[in-house]
Length: 93
Image (cartoon, rainbow, N blue to C red):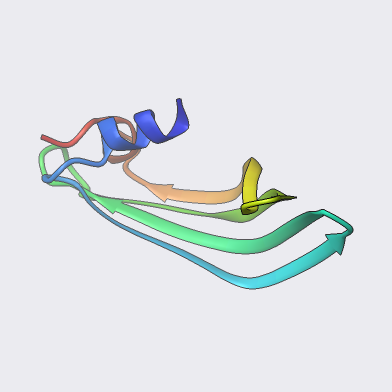
C-alpha cells in the first residue's frame, strides 16, 4: 500500500529528494533495527509556493532469512515540516 501511494503521488511533474543519514544498526541474532535521520522535499508548480519539506527519523526492522535480509517493518516519525501542503498531497501529472 505504501509503495502504491508513493508511486501514485510522485509522478513526472513533481520532483523530490529524499536523504537518510547517521545510520545506527542494532543486531540481535537474526533481526536488526536500523535507525536514521531523514530529510525530504517535494517540488511542484501550480498552486503558490512550489516547495514542501519534511524532517524526521526512520526506523527499519529487518529479519534474516535463508535467502538474505528482508525489511519487514518501517516507520517515519516526522519532527518538522514546512512549505505548501498542497505539494505534499497533490499527485503529480
